[in-house]
Image (tube, rainbow, N blue to C red; front, side):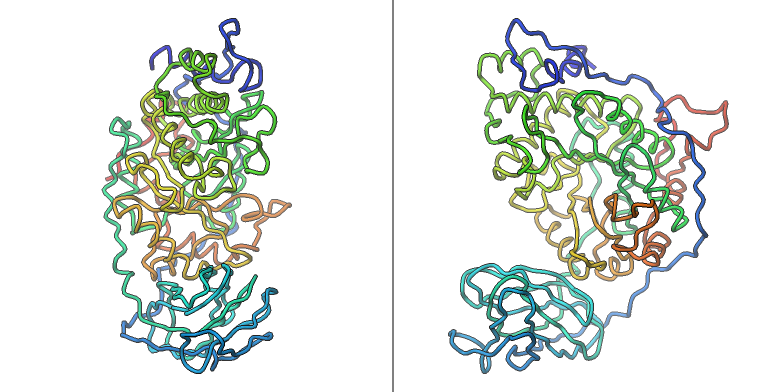
Length: 560
Protein backbone atom coordinates (compact mmCIF):
# COMPACT_ATOMS: atom_id res chain seq x y z
CA UNK A 1 0.00 0.00 0.00
CA UNK A 2 1.15 3.54 -0.78
CA UNK A 3 2.68 5.15 2.32
CA UNK A 4 0.40 8.17 1.89
CA UNK A 5 -2.59 5.89 2.38
CA UNK A 6 -1.18 4.48 5.60
CA UNK A 7 -0.65 8.03 6.80
CA UNK A 8 -4.23 8.86 5.86
CA UNK A 9 -5.46 5.99 7.97
CA UNK A 10 -3.36 7.08 10.89
CA UNK A 11 -4.83 10.57 10.70
CA UNK A 12 -8.44 9.58 10.27
CA UNK A 13 -9.53 9.93 13.89
CA UNK A 14 -9.21 13.68 13.77
CA UNK A 15 -7.64 16.14 16.17
CA UNK A 16 -8.35 15.13 19.77
CA UNK A 17 -11.54 13.02 20.00
CA UNK A 18 -13.83 15.05 17.75
CA UNK A 19 -14.34 14.56 14.05
CA UNK A 20 -15.25 18.20 13.84
CA UNK A 21 -12.28 19.68 15.68
CA UNK A 22 -11.04 22.93 14.21
CA UNK A 23 -8.68 22.21 11.36
CA UNK A 24 -6.39 24.84 9.84
CA UNK A 25 -2.77 25.12 8.79
CA UNK A 26 -1.65 25.46 12.41
CA UNK A 27 -3.39 22.32 13.62
CA UNK A 28 -1.78 18.94 12.89
CA UNK A 29 -3.73 15.68 12.91
CA UNK A 30 -2.47 13.12 15.40
CA UNK A 31 -1.80 9.51 14.41
CA UNK A 32 -4.22 7.28 16.32
CA UNK A 33 -5.59 4.64 13.93
CA UNK A 34 -3.37 1.56 13.89
CA UNK A 35 -3.18 -0.84 10.98
CA UNK A 36 -2.41 -4.39 12.01
CA UNK A 37 0.37 -5.72 9.80
CA UNK A 38 0.50 -9.22 11.31
CA UNK A 39 -0.19 -12.20 9.06
CA UNK A 40 -2.02 -14.46 11.51
CA UNK A 41 -4.97 -13.77 13.76
CA UNK A 42 -4.54 -13.88 17.51
CA UNK A 43 -6.96 -15.62 19.83
CA UNK A 44 -9.31 -13.15 21.44
CA UNK A 45 -10.40 -15.38 24.31
CA UNK A 46 -9.25 -18.51 26.03
CA UNK A 47 -10.53 -21.60 24.18
CA UNK A 48 -13.67 -23.10 25.67
CA UNK A 49 -15.14 -26.55 25.40
CA UNK A 50 -18.48 -26.49 23.61
CA UNK A 51 -20.35 -29.75 23.63
CA UNK A 52 -23.63 -30.37 21.77
CA UNK A 53 -26.51 -31.69 23.84
CA UNK A 54 -26.94 -34.50 21.34
CA UNK A 55 -26.54 -35.29 17.66
CA UNK A 56 -29.43 -35.37 15.23
CA UNK A 57 -30.17 -37.14 11.96
CA UNK A 58 -30.23 -35.35 8.63
CA UNK A 59 -33.66 -34.11 7.61
CA UNK A 60 -34.43 -34.39 3.90
CA UNK A 61 -36.19 -31.41 2.31
CA UNK A 62 -39.86 -32.39 2.21
CA UNK A 63 -43.16 -30.75 1.28
CA UNK A 64 -46.52 -31.89 -0.13
CA UNK A 65 -46.58 -32.95 -3.76
CA UNK A 66 -47.53 -29.97 -5.93
CA UNK A 67 -50.26 -30.40 -8.52
CA UNK A 68 -50.67 -27.40 -10.79
CA UNK A 69 -54.22 -26.62 -11.81
CA UNK A 70 -55.74 -23.54 -13.34
CA UNK A 71 -58.22 -21.86 -11.00
CA UNK A 72 -59.92 -18.52 -10.47
CA UNK A 73 -62.35 -18.70 -7.55
CA UNK A 74 -63.93 -15.45 -6.37
CA UNK A 75 -65.36 -15.02 -2.85
CA UNK A 76 -67.62 -12.05 -2.09
CA UNK A 77 -66.83 -10.36 1.23
CA UNK A 78 -70.48 -9.68 2.11
CA UNK A 79 -71.14 -13.44 2.04
CA UNK A 80 -68.23 -14.28 4.33
CA UNK A 81 -68.25 -14.45 8.14
CA UNK A 82 -68.10 -10.94 9.65
CA UNK A 83 -66.55 -10.49 13.09
CA UNK A 84 -66.01 -7.69 15.61
CA UNK A 85 -68.48 -5.17 14.17
CA UNK A 86 -67.68 -5.46 10.46
CA UNK A 87 -70.83 -4.87 8.38
CA UNK A 88 -72.14 -4.80 4.81
CA UNK A 89 -72.57 -1.53 2.91
CA UNK A 90 -73.54 -0.41 -0.61
CA UNK A 91 -72.74 3.32 -0.66
CA UNK A 92 -69.61 3.23 -2.83
CA UNK A 93 -69.87 2.77 -6.61
CA UNK A 94 -68.36 -0.02 -8.68
CA UNK A 95 -68.44 -2.84 -6.13
CA UNK A 96 -68.95 -6.50 -7.01
CA UNK A 97 -71.91 -8.67 -5.96
CA UNK A 98 -74.46 -7.40 -3.46
CA UNK A 99 -72.18 -5.03 -1.56
CA UNK A 100 -68.90 -4.76 0.32
CA UNK A 101 -67.75 -4.92 3.95
CA UNK A 102 -66.75 -1.95 6.10
CA UNK A 103 -67.13 -0.90 9.75
CA UNK A 104 -63.76 -2.29 10.79
CA UNK A 105 -62.87 0.63 13.05
CA UNK A 106 -59.28 1.36 14.06
CA UNK A 107 -58.73 -1.03 16.97
CA UNK A 108 -57.81 -4.13 14.93
CA UNK A 109 -60.68 -6.24 16.34
CA UNK A 110 -62.99 -6.54 13.32
CA UNK A 111 -62.31 -9.01 10.52
CA UNK A 112 -63.71 -10.95 7.58
CA UNK A 113 -63.31 -14.74 7.45
CA UNK A 114 -63.56 -16.42 4.03
CA UNK A 115 -64.34 -20.13 3.79
CA UNK A 116 -62.27 -21.18 0.78
CA UNK A 117 -62.12 -24.46 -1.11
CA UNK A 118 -58.60 -25.06 -2.44
CA UNK A 119 -58.63 -27.32 -5.54
CA UNK A 120 -55.05 -28.65 -5.26
CA UNK A 121 -51.70 -28.39 -3.46
CA UNK A 122 -49.97 -25.52 -5.22
CA UNK A 123 -48.98 -21.87 -5.06
CA UNK A 124 -51.69 -19.25 -5.47
CA UNK A 125 -51.97 -15.50 -5.88
CA UNK A 126 -54.45 -13.98 -3.42
CA UNK A 127 -56.05 -10.75 -4.69
CA UNK A 128 -58.17 -8.52 -2.48
CA UNK A 129 -60.28 -5.70 -3.91
CA UNK A 130 -60.02 -2.91 -1.32
CA UNK A 131 -60.88 0.79 -1.10
CA UNK A 132 -59.35 3.04 1.56
CA UNK A 133 -58.85 6.77 1.99
CA UNK A 134 -55.66 6.22 3.99
CA UNK A 135 -53.06 3.43 4.00
CA UNK A 136 -54.10 0.70 6.42
CA UNK A 137 -51.97 -2.21 7.65
CA UNK A 138 -53.81 -5.53 7.27
CA UNK A 139 -53.01 -8.93 8.71
CA UNK A 140 -53.80 -12.05 6.68
CA UNK A 141 -54.14 -15.41 8.43
CA UNK A 142 -54.71 -18.93 7.15
CA UNK A 143 -56.38 -20.84 9.95
CA UNK A 144 -54.36 -19.98 13.05
CA UNK A 145 -51.16 -19.12 11.18
CA UNK A 146 -50.29 -15.66 9.93
CA UNK A 147 -49.49 -15.56 6.22
CA UNK A 148 -48.37 -11.97 5.85
CA UNK A 149 -49.03 -8.30 6.47
CA UNK A 150 -49.66 -5.72 3.76
CA UNK A 151 -50.61 -2.07 3.31
CA UNK A 152 -53.64 -0.83 1.39
CA UNK A 153 -53.58 2.05 -1.08
CA UNK A 154 -54.92 5.46 -0.06
CA UNK A 155 -56.66 6.60 -3.24
CA UNK A 156 -60.22 5.97 -2.06
CA UNK A 157 -60.94 3.65 -5.00
CA UNK A 158 -61.39 -0.10 -5.16
CA UNK A 159 -57.89 -1.41 -6.02
CA UNK A 160 -56.42 -4.87 -6.41
CA UNK A 161 -53.85 -5.82 -3.78
CA UNK A 162 -52.19 -9.14 -4.59
CA UNK A 163 -50.09 -11.41 -2.40
CA UNK A 164 -48.10 -13.65 -4.72
CA UNK A 165 -46.95 -17.23 -4.38
CA UNK A 166 -48.88 -18.40 -1.30
CA UNK A 167 -48.76 -22.17 -0.89
CA UNK A 168 -52.16 -23.66 -0.02
CA UNK A 169 -53.05 -27.31 0.54
CA UNK A 170 -56.05 -28.97 -1.03
CA UNK A 171 -59.34 -28.80 0.85
CA UNK A 172 -61.51 -26.40 2.82
CA UNK A 173 -59.72 -23.71 4.80
CA UNK A 174 -60.39 -20.38 6.49
CA UNK A 175 -58.67 -17.19 5.35
CA UNK A 176 -59.06 -14.17 7.66
CA UNK A 177 -58.23 -10.53 6.94
CA UNK A 178 -57.97 -8.01 9.79
CA UNK A 179 -57.29 -4.27 9.32
CA UNK A 180 -55.13 -3.23 12.27
CA UNK A 181 -55.15 0.56 12.31
CA UNK A 182 -57.88 2.09 10.18
CA UNK A 183 -61.09 1.88 8.22
CA UNK A 184 -61.43 0.37 4.76
CA UNK A 185 -63.93 -1.28 2.41
CA UNK A 186 -63.38 -4.90 1.33
CA UNK A 187 -65.18 -6.03 -1.82
CA UNK A 188 -63.98 -9.58 -2.53
CA UNK A 189 -61.17 -12.14 -2.50
CA UNK A 190 -59.96 -13.82 -5.69
CA UNK A 191 -57.70 -16.89 -5.68
CA UNK A 192 -55.77 -17.81 -8.83
CA UNK A 193 -52.97 -20.28 -9.46
CA UNK A 194 -49.55 -18.62 -9.41
CA UNK A 195 -47.41 -18.61 -12.55
CA UNK A 196 -44.47 -16.44 -11.44
CA UNK A 197 -42.48 -18.92 -9.30
CA UNK A 198 -40.88 -20.30 -12.43
CA UNK A 199 -39.43 -16.86 -13.13
CA UNK A 200 -36.98 -17.20 -10.22
CA UNK A 201 -33.43 -17.80 -11.44
CA UNK A 202 -30.21 -18.92 -9.74
CA UNK A 203 -27.82 -18.32 -12.62
CA UNK A 204 -25.68 -15.61 -10.98
CA UNK A 205 -22.20 -15.79 -12.48
CA UNK A 206 -20.30 -14.85 -9.34
CA UNK A 207 -18.01 -12.26 -10.91
CA UNK A 208 -17.06 -9.57 -8.40
CA UNK A 209 -17.76 -5.95 -9.32
CA UNK A 210 -14.28 -4.97 -8.17
CA UNK A 211 -12.19 -6.16 -11.11
CA UNK A 212 -9.06 -5.95 -8.92
CA UNK A 213 -10.47 -8.22 -6.21
CA UNK A 214 -8.05 -10.58 -4.50
CA UNK A 215 -7.99 -14.34 -5.01
CA UNK A 216 -9.53 -15.19 -1.63
CA UNK A 217 -12.54 -12.96 -2.32
CA UNK A 218 -12.91 -14.38 -5.83
CA UNK A 219 -12.79 -17.96 -4.52
CA UNK A 220 -15.40 -17.25 -1.86
CA UNK A 221 -17.73 -15.52 -4.32
CA UNK A 222 -17.30 -18.40 -6.76
CA UNK A 223 -18.30 -20.87 -4.05
CA UNK A 224 -21.36 -18.84 -3.07
CA UNK A 225 -22.47 -18.65 -6.70
CA UNK A 226 -21.90 -22.36 -7.42
CA UNK A 227 -24.12 -23.31 -4.48
CA UNK A 228 -26.77 -20.63 -4.98
CA UNK A 229 -30.18 -22.29 -5.14
CA UNK A 230 -28.75 -25.62 -3.92
CA UNK A 231 -28.30 -24.77 -0.24
CA UNK A 232 -29.10 -21.98 2.16
CA UNK A 233 -25.93 -21.10 4.05
CA UNK A 234 -26.46 -20.73 7.80
CA UNK A 235 -25.41 -17.62 9.71
CA UNK A 236 -25.62 -16.05 13.15
CA UNK A 237 -24.78 -12.60 14.55
CA UNK A 238 -22.27 -12.46 17.37
CA UNK A 239 -21.97 -9.66 19.87
CA UNK A 240 -19.01 -8.36 21.84
CA UNK A 241 -16.15 -10.07 20.06
CA UNK A 242 -16.91 -13.60 21.23
CA UNK A 243 -18.90 -16.53 19.83
CA UNK A 244 -21.40 -17.22 22.60
CA UNK A 245 -24.37 -17.11 20.21
CA UNK A 246 -22.69 -19.48 17.76
CA UNK A 247 -21.64 -21.83 20.55
CA UNK A 248 -25.25 -21.88 21.76
CA UNK A 249 -26.44 -22.88 18.29
CA UNK A 250 -23.91 -25.73 18.34
CA UNK A 251 -24.93 -26.94 21.79
CA UNK A 252 -28.59 -26.91 20.70
CA UNK A 253 -28.34 -28.41 17.21
CA UNK A 254 -24.97 -30.18 17.03
CA UNK A 255 -24.02 -27.82 14.16
CA UNK A 256 -22.22 -24.50 13.83
CA UNK A 257 -23.36 -21.82 11.37
CA UNK A 258 -21.02 -21.10 8.47
CA UNK A 259 -21.17 -17.30 8.63
CA UNK A 260 -20.27 -15.26 11.68
CA UNK A 261 -21.99 -11.88 11.37
CA UNK A 262 -20.65 -8.91 13.33
CA UNK A 263 -20.76 -5.13 13.44
CA UNK A 264 -17.69 -2.90 13.22
CA UNK A 265 -17.76 0.54 14.81
CA UNK A 266 -15.69 3.70 14.79
CA UNK A 267 -14.28 3.90 18.32
CA UNK A 268 -14.76 7.11 20.30
CA UNK A 269 -11.51 6.72 22.23
CA UNK A 270 -9.91 3.30 22.68
CA UNK A 271 -9.37 1.02 19.70
CA UNK A 272 -9.18 -2.12 21.85
CA UNK A 273 -12.88 -3.00 21.53
CA UNK A 274 -12.89 -2.41 17.77
CA UNK A 275 -9.89 -4.58 17.13
CA UNK A 276 -11.32 -7.28 19.35
CA UNK A 277 -14.09 -7.54 16.75
CA UNK A 278 -11.50 -7.48 13.96
CA UNK A 279 -9.58 -10.31 15.62
CA UNK A 280 -12.77 -12.33 16.14
CA UNK A 281 -13.73 -11.96 12.46
CA UNK A 282 -10.24 -13.04 11.36
CA UNK A 283 -10.18 -15.97 13.78
CA UNK A 284 -13.52 -17.30 12.50
CA UNK A 285 -12.16 -17.28 8.96
CA UNK A 286 -8.89 -18.93 10.00
CA UNK A 287 -10.89 -21.67 11.67
CA UNK A 288 -12.74 -22.42 8.45
CA UNK A 289 -15.79 -20.16 8.42
CA UNK A 290 -17.00 -17.04 6.61
CA UNK A 291 -17.03 -13.58 8.19
CA UNK A 292 -19.68 -10.97 7.38
CA UNK A 293 -19.23 -7.43 8.68
CA UNK A 294 -21.97 -4.80 8.92
CA UNK A 295 -21.46 -1.12 9.62
CA UNK A 296 -24.13 0.41 11.83
CA UNK A 297 -22.52 3.81 11.69
CA UNK A 298 -22.72 6.23 14.59
CA UNK A 299 -23.10 9.62 12.96
CA UNK A 300 -19.92 11.72 12.93
CA UNK A 301 -21.42 14.47 15.06
CA UNK A 302 -19.67 16.35 17.84
CA UNK A 303 -22.87 16.36 19.90
CA UNK A 304 -25.12 13.37 19.18
CA UNK A 305 -23.45 10.31 17.67
CA UNK A 306 -26.53 8.13 17.27
CA UNK A 307 -27.32 5.55 14.61
CA UNK A 308 -31.04 6.16 14.46
CA UNK A 309 -32.25 9.44 13.00
CA UNK A 310 -33.92 10.57 16.21
CA UNK A 311 -30.68 9.99 18.16
CA UNK A 312 -28.45 12.34 16.18
CA UNK A 313 -28.39 15.90 14.88
CA UNK A 314 -26.31 14.89 11.84
CA UNK A 315 -27.71 15.95 8.45
CA UNK A 316 -26.26 13.88 5.60
CA UNK A 317 -27.66 16.24 2.97
CA UNK A 318 -25.19 18.89 4.18
CA UNK A 319 -22.32 16.52 3.42
CA UNK A 320 -23.13 15.94 -0.24
CA UNK A 321 -20.69 17.55 -2.65
CA UNK A 322 -20.03 17.33 -6.36
CA UNK A 323 -16.28 17.54 -5.82
CA UNK A 324 -14.21 14.46 -6.68
CA UNK A 325 -13.01 13.58 -3.18
CA UNK A 326 -12.90 9.76 -3.13
CA UNK A 327 -9.22 9.47 -4.06
CA UNK A 328 -7.78 12.51 -2.32
CA UNK A 329 -5.17 12.23 0.41
CA UNK A 330 -5.97 13.21 3.98
CA UNK A 331 -3.82 16.30 3.51
CA UNK A 332 -5.79 17.32 0.41
CA UNK A 333 -9.11 16.73 2.18
CA UNK A 334 -7.99 18.74 5.18
CA UNK A 335 -7.09 21.63 2.90
CA UNK A 336 -10.52 21.51 1.21
CA UNK A 337 -12.18 21.60 4.61
CA UNK A 338 -10.02 24.43 5.93
CA UNK A 339 -10.93 26.50 2.85
CA UNK A 340 -14.63 25.75 3.25
CA UNK A 341 -14.81 23.82 -0.03
CA UNK A 342 -16.34 20.82 1.76
CA UNK A 343 -18.57 20.97 4.82
CA UNK A 344 -17.75 19.73 8.29
CA UNK A 345 -20.37 17.01 7.73
CA UNK A 346 -18.55 15.84 4.59
CA UNK A 347 -15.18 15.95 6.31
CA UNK A 348 -16.55 14.04 9.30
CA UNK A 349 -17.84 11.29 7.02
CA UNK A 350 -14.45 10.99 5.34
CA UNK A 351 -12.63 10.69 8.66
CA UNK A 352 -14.94 7.84 9.68
CA UNK A 353 -14.64 6.15 6.30
CA UNK A 354 -10.86 6.19 6.62
CA UNK A 355 -11.08 4.81 10.15
CA UNK A 356 -13.22 1.92 8.93
CA UNK A 357 -10.80 1.34 6.07
CA UNK A 358 -8.10 0.86 8.68
CA UNK A 359 -10.00 -1.98 10.34
CA UNK A 360 -10.79 -3.66 7.02
CA UNK A 361 -7.18 -3.26 5.94
CA UNK A 362 -6.21 -5.26 9.01
CA UNK A 363 -8.35 -8.11 7.70
CA UNK A 364 -6.88 -7.71 4.23
CA UNK A 365 -3.38 -7.97 5.68
CA UNK A 366 -4.32 -11.31 7.25
CA UNK A 367 -5.77 -12.61 3.98
CA UNK A 368 -9.37 -12.55 5.22
CA UNK A 369 -12.14 -12.09 2.61
CA UNK A 370 -15.16 -10.29 4.02
CA UNK A 371 -18.85 -10.14 3.17
CA UNK A 372 -19.11 -6.36 3.60
CA UNK A 373 -22.48 -4.72 4.40
CA UNK A 374 -22.38 -0.95 4.92
CA UNK A 375 -25.39 1.39 5.26
CA UNK A 376 -28.03 -1.24 6.18
CA UNK A 377 -31.70 -0.78 5.26
CA UNK A 378 -30.96 2.23 3.08
CA UNK A 379 -34.54 2.61 1.83
CA UNK A 380 -35.86 3.80 5.20
CA UNK A 381 -35.60 7.04 7.16
CA UNK A 382 -34.97 5.41 10.53
CA UNK A 383 -31.18 5.58 10.12
CA UNK A 384 -29.47 8.91 9.42
CA UNK A 385 -27.91 7.71 6.14
CA UNK A 386 -31.41 7.24 4.67
CA UNK A 387 -33.18 10.08 6.47
CA UNK A 388 -32.71 12.72 3.75
CA UNK A 389 -33.79 10.66 0.78
CA UNK A 390 -32.25 8.34 -1.76
CA UNK A 391 -29.94 10.84 -3.47
CA UNK A 392 -27.86 11.46 -0.33
CA UNK A 393 -27.80 7.75 0.47
CA UNK A 394 -26.63 6.84 -3.05
CA UNK A 395 -23.95 9.52 -2.96
CA UNK A 396 -22.59 8.16 0.32
CA UNK A 397 -22.62 4.57 -0.94
CA UNK A 398 -20.67 5.58 -4.04
CA UNK A 399 -18.16 7.53 -1.95
CA UNK A 400 -17.51 4.54 0.32
CA UNK A 401 -17.16 2.17 -2.61
CA UNK A 402 -14.77 4.41 -4.54
CA UNK A 403 -12.61 5.29 -1.55
CA UNK A 404 -12.32 1.68 -0.37
CA UNK A 405 -11.65 0.11 -3.78
CA UNK A 406 -9.67 2.84 -5.54
CA UNK A 407 -7.85 4.73 -2.80
CA UNK A 408 -7.33 2.08 -0.13
CA UNK A 409 -7.29 -0.77 -2.65
CA UNK A 410 -9.34 -3.06 -0.41
CA UNK A 411 -9.54 -6.13 -2.61
CA UNK A 412 -10.89 -8.51 0.04
CA UNK A 413 -14.48 -7.21 0.12
CA UNK A 414 -17.63 -8.79 -1.31
CA UNK A 415 -20.09 -5.90 -1.34
CA UNK A 416 -23.61 -6.44 0.03
CA UNK A 417 -26.22 -3.82 -0.83
CA UNK A 418 -29.02 -3.80 1.75
CA UNK A 419 -31.12 -0.99 0.28
CA UNK A 420 -34.22 -3.22 0.16
CA UNK A 421 -36.08 -1.10 -2.39
CA UNK A 422 -35.75 -0.11 -6.02
CA UNK A 423 -36.01 3.51 -4.88
CA UNK A 424 -32.70 3.13 -3.04
CA UNK A 425 -30.96 1.25 -5.85
CA UNK A 426 -27.30 2.18 -6.16
CA UNK A 427 -25.10 1.59 -9.19
CA UNK A 428 -25.23 -2.17 -9.87
CA UNK A 429 -21.52 -2.01 -10.64
CA UNK A 430 -20.85 -1.32 -6.94
CA UNK A 431 -22.34 -4.38 -5.23
CA UNK A 432 -22.17 -8.16 -5.55
CA UNK A 433 -25.04 -9.35 -3.36
CA UNK A 434 -28.48 -7.84 -2.71
CA UNK A 435 -29.99 -8.52 0.70
CA UNK A 436 -33.08 -7.83 2.77
CA UNK A 437 -33.83 -7.85 6.49
CA UNK A 438 -36.88 -9.89 7.51
CA UNK A 439 -38.59 -9.47 10.86
CA UNK A 440 -42.15 -10.44 11.79
CA UNK A 441 -44.25 -9.12 14.67
CA UNK A 442 -44.64 -11.99 17.12
CA UNK A 443 -44.72 -14.64 14.40
CA UNK A 444 -42.30 -17.51 13.73
CA UNK A 445 -43.29 -18.38 10.17
CA UNK A 446 -42.38 -16.11 7.24
CA UNK A 447 -45.32 -17.39 5.22
CA UNK A 448 -45.67 -15.83 1.79
CA UNK A 449 -43.15 -13.08 2.55
CA UNK A 450 -40.37 -15.57 1.88
CA UNK A 451 -41.21 -15.78 -1.80
CA UNK A 452 -42.62 -12.26 -2.16
CA UNK A 453 -39.46 -10.57 -0.89
CA UNK A 454 -37.16 -12.83 -2.90
CA UNK A 455 -39.07 -12.31 -6.14
CA UNK A 456 -39.39 -8.56 -5.62
CA UNK A 457 -35.65 -8.09 -5.06
CA UNK A 458 -34.66 -10.26 -8.00
CA UNK A 459 -37.04 -8.32 -10.22
CA UNK A 460 -35.22 -5.01 -9.68
CA UNK A 461 -31.62 -6.18 -9.19
CA UNK A 462 -31.64 -8.86 -11.89
CA UNK A 463 -30.86 -12.57 -11.84
CA UNK A 464 -27.10 -12.02 -12.06
CA UNK A 465 -26.93 -10.93 -8.41
CA UNK A 466 -27.02 -13.26 -5.42
CA UNK A 467 -29.91 -12.54 -3.02
CA UNK A 468 -29.57 -13.11 0.73
CA UNK A 469 -31.20 -12.42 4.10
CA UNK A 470 -28.79 -10.13 5.92
CA UNK A 471 -30.86 -10.04 9.12
CA UNK A 472 -33.82 -11.98 10.43
CA UNK A 473 -35.58 -12.61 13.69
CA UNK A 474 -36.23 -16.32 13.20
CA UNK A 475 -34.52 -19.16 11.37
CA UNK A 476 -36.00 -19.83 7.92
CA UNK A 477 -37.93 -23.05 7.28
CA UNK A 478 -35.82 -24.96 4.74
CA UNK A 479 -38.76 -27.02 3.51
CA UNK A 480 -40.78 -23.86 2.81
CA UNK A 481 -37.82 -22.17 1.09
CA UNK A 482 -37.37 -25.01 -1.41
CA UNK A 483 -41.12 -25.52 -1.79
CA UNK A 484 -41.58 -21.83 -2.64
CA UNK A 485 -38.49 -21.64 -4.89
CA UNK A 486 -36.99 -18.92 -2.67
CA UNK A 487 -33.60 -20.36 -1.73
CA UNK A 488 -31.70 -17.37 -0.39
CA UNK A 489 -27.91 -17.54 -0.60
CA UNK A 490 -27.58 -17.21 3.18
CA UNK A 491 -29.32 -15.90 6.28
CA UNK A 492 -28.18 -14.23 9.50
CA UNK A 493 -30.22 -14.35 12.70
CA UNK A 494 -29.79 -11.25 14.89
CA UNK A 495 -28.23 -11.67 18.33
CA UNK A 496 -29.68 -11.14 21.82
CA UNK A 497 -33.27 -12.16 22.46
CA UNK A 498 -33.61 -13.68 19.00
CA UNK A 499 -31.40 -16.58 20.05
CA UNK A 500 -30.65 -16.51 23.80
CA UNK A 501 -32.26 -15.38 27.03
CA UNK A 502 -30.74 -13.47 29.95
CA UNK A 503 -29.32 -16.71 31.35
CA UNK A 504 -27.49 -17.51 28.14
CA UNK A 505 -29.87 -20.35 27.32
CA UNK A 506 -31.64 -20.87 24.03
CA UNK A 507 -34.73 -18.65 23.67
CA UNK A 508 -37.66 -20.27 21.84
CA UNK A 509 -39.71 -17.08 21.52
CA UNK A 510 -38.78 -16.52 17.85
CA UNK A 511 -37.72 -19.98 16.66
CA UNK A 512 -38.73 -23.12 18.53
CA UNK A 513 -35.96 -25.51 19.48
CA UNK A 514 -37.44 -28.21 17.26
CA UNK A 515 -37.55 -25.81 14.29
CA UNK A 516 -33.95 -24.73 14.92
CA UNK A 517 -32.74 -28.33 15.10
CA UNK A 518 -34.61 -29.28 11.96
CA UNK A 519 -33.29 -26.24 10.04
CA UNK A 520 -29.63 -26.80 10.98
CA UNK A 521 -29.83 -30.51 10.23
CA UNK A 522 -31.78 -30.09 7.00
CA UNK A 523 -30.27 -31.29 3.74
CA UNK A 524 -31.17 -27.86 2.40
CA UNK A 525 -28.98 -25.99 4.90
CA UNK A 526 -25.20 -25.70 4.75
CA UNK A 527 -23.46 -25.79 8.13
CA UNK A 528 -19.84 -25.19 9.10
CA UNK A 529 -18.73 -28.83 9.02
CA UNK A 530 -20.22 -29.26 5.53
CA UNK A 531 -18.72 -26.00 4.29
CA UNK A 532 -15.24 -26.98 5.47
CA UNK A 533 -15.55 -30.36 3.81
CA UNK A 534 -16.80 -28.90 0.52
CA UNK A 535 -13.97 -26.38 0.36
CA UNK A 536 -11.28 -28.74 1.64
CA UNK A 537 -10.51 -26.49 4.60
CA UNK A 538 -8.57 -27.64 7.64
CA UNK A 539 -9.29 -25.21 10.50
CA UNK A 540 -6.29 -23.49 12.05
CA UNK A 541 -7.32 -24.74 15.51
CA UNK A 542 -7.19 -28.36 14.28
CA UNK A 543 -3.60 -28.16 13.04
CA UNK A 544 -0.85 -29.80 15.01
CA UNK A 545 1.52 -27.51 16.93
CA UNK A 546 4.43 -27.41 14.45
CA UNK A 547 2.20 -27.44 11.41
CA UNK A 548 0.39 -24.12 11.87
CA UNK A 549 0.24 -22.06 8.75
CA UNK A 550 1.79 -18.61 8.72
CA UNK A 551 -0.91 -16.89 6.72
CA UNK A 552 -4.67 -16.98 6.37
CA UNK A 553 -4.30 -17.57 2.64
CA UNK A 554 -2.77 -21.00 3.31
CA UNK A 555 -5.77 -22.21 5.28
CA UNK A 556 -8.16 -21.95 2.34
CA UNK A 557 -8.15 -23.94 -0.88
CA UNK A 558 -10.23 -23.46 -3.96
CA UNK A 559 -13.58 -25.24 -3.96
CA UNK A 560 -13.48 -28.34 -6.12
